[in-house]
Image (tube, rainbow, N blue to C red; front, side, top):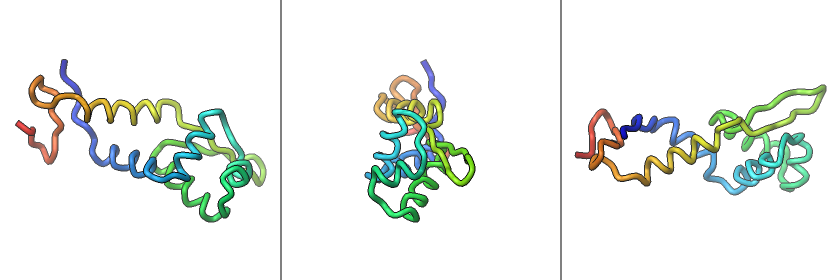
Length: 111
C-alpha cells in the first residue's frame, strides 16, 4: 500500500496551532459544539486580545471556522480537521521506505 507524501508545510501549520495549551483547550471545548467567543473567553479566563490571537492561529491552520451573528462571533471545529492531524501522526509513525511509505523531504526518499 502506498501513501501520499506528507505536505510538510500543512503539517507544520496544524501542529503549530495545536502546540499551545490555550489553543488545545479551545479545540477541546469546540469538540462539544459551536461556542460564542464570549463563552470561550469566560471559560478560559483569558483577555479578549489574547483569545483573538489564538483563534486566528487555529483558523489560519484550518482547524476552526467562525461565523458572525450581529456583534458576536461563533467558532466551530472544521469537520475532519482533527482527522487530518491524526492521519499525519499515523503517517509519521508508520515504517518508511521499507514498504514504499516514504516521507519525502525536498524531493528525496530516506532510502
